[in-house]
Image (cartoon, rainbow, N blue to C red; front, side):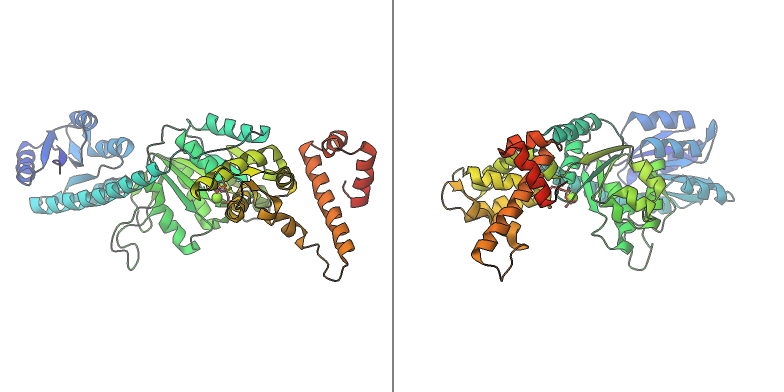
Length: 453
Ligand SMILES: Nc1ncnc2c1ncn2[C@@H]1O[C@H](COP(=O)(O)OP(=O)(O)OP(=O)(O)O)[C@@H](O)[C@H]1O
Ligand SMILES: [Mg+2]
C-alpha cells in the first residue's frame, strides 16, 4: 500500500509541527502550509488523501479550503480544526462539505481516529468504484445493426450527443433498443472508461429506490451500520442510466430534479453535500407527455430531461431493419450453437417482414434464437418460426371447416401484409400496390374489404 498523503494547513507553528510529527510517526506522508494561498497551491499540486485545516488563517478563512476541495476534489475528505467556542462555524463547514470537525485543544489521537475513519470510508468508496469499472469494461461497445433512415437518424443523434454532458431522454416501445443506445452514447464518449451504471426505476421497490440512487449515511436508519454509496456516486465520472423513469414516484422525482439542476445531493439520513460529475441518460417506454398531463410525472422534471429526446421508432415502422437484424441474430446464434451459418428462405423473409413485432427487436431476437434451435438443416423455413401459427392463433375458429379456416387465414395475412406495405411506403397506395405486386385497383378493393383506411 502506498503512503497516504495528508495536507495540514495551520498557521501556528508549534501546533503544525506537533501534528506533523504525530502523523508521520503513524506512517503518513505529511505536507503543510500556513495560509490559505499556499494550501490551495499544494492542493492542486498533487494527489492527496486527506486535508486537515484550521479555520482561522492569516490570509483568510479555512472555509475557502473546504470550498476549493469540494469543488475540485469531492472525494478528498476535509477535517476542520476550530477553536473552542466557534462550534457554529465548524458546523457550517460540515454543512458546506467538510467531512468532520475537531475543537481545539484536542488529543492528537482523536484527530488520528477521525483521519482513519475518513480514509476507510474513502477506501471502500474507491473499491466499489474499481469494481464497477472492471464490470463496465466487460461491456464493450455493443454491436448495433440498422440501415433504415429512421435508425440512422437515431445513431446520428447518439453520436452527436455522446461527447457532451447534455442529459439525454430515450423514448421508445419496449424492446426497441433504448438501453443499447444509452450504452452506445456512453461508449462513444470520453467517459467510456468510467462506469456505466444502470438502474431500473420500475424494478426496485419504491421505498428502496432513494437508497439505491443516493446511498445512505451510517446510522441513517436502524440497520444502516455502514455508509452506503448510491448509484449516483458509483457512476462518478461516468454515466448513470435511469431506465423506466416514467415509473419513478413523485417525491423522488422532486429530489432527482434538484440533483439534475445542482449536480449535488445528500445521502439518505445525511446533510453532507455530495458533488458528482456524471452524465444522466433516462429512458421510458411510456408517453411522458401523457404522464405529465395526467399528473403522474412532474412537468418541470420532464422539461429538464427532455433537453434532447431520442425517439426510437418501433421495428414495424422501419421494416428495412428487419432482415439485417435477422441475419445478425442468425449468425450470432448459429455461432453460439455451433451450427453452420443458416440462410433464410424467401417465404421466411416475407413472414418476418409482415409480422408486426409488438415486442420489437427483443421479440425478433427471441424468435430467431428459437428458430436456430429448431432448425436441423441449413435453411430457416417458416415452420421453424412458429410465427404464422401465432399470427393466426387469435383468429382460429374451432368450429370452422378447413376451407373457412384457410380463407380467414388468408384474409388475416393479406390484411397484415397490406398494412405493413402501407407503412413501408408512408401510406403511398400506388407504391404499396407495386410492392405487393397487385394492381392499384385490386389494392383499393382490398383496402375497402378489410376496412383499412
Ligand atoms: N439495432 C440493434 N442492433 C442490435 N441489437 C439490438 C438492436 N436494437 C435492439 N437490440 C437488442 O435487442 C434487445 C433489446 O434491446 P434493449 O434492451 O436495448 O431495449 P429496450 O428498449 O431497453 O427495451 P425495454 O423497454 O423492454 O427495456 C437487446 O438484446 C439488444 O441488444
Ligand atoms: Mg430497457
